[in-house]
Amino acid sequence: MGIFSDKNDTDKEDLKRIKEIIISTGNINRSYVVRDVVFATTKIEADLFDPSVDPNESLAGIKLELQQKAHAYGANAVINCHFDHDHVLKDGKTYLQIFAYGTVVQYIQSTIGG
Image (cartoon, rainbow, N blue to C red):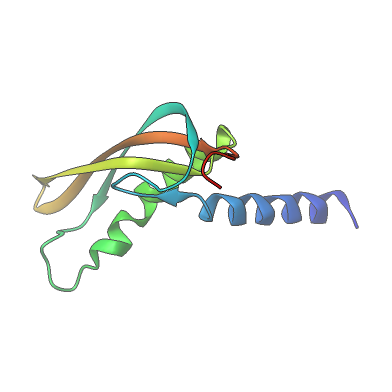
């Protein structure tokens, strides 16, 4: 395989690992060490309260950004995430500003209790 195929395969593998990182608004029932706190922001043109807008799709980008930041640490999850948003009207368009943060954690092996 050529250099471009190898890089493409690596990119696909990285994306797969990134997508496997858990994003949770609560805690997780696993032993872990805290790596850091990460923050992400974005602004998209959307009205979250428009019935034709899928909120899950609107938040997918900000979730991916948190996952990418956790991946840089070699972590498994971002827990206790908080998401905040604000609507901004500018030039007749509605923009959604999203601010997110969470705690990056990496699983550890535990033999206590089992």
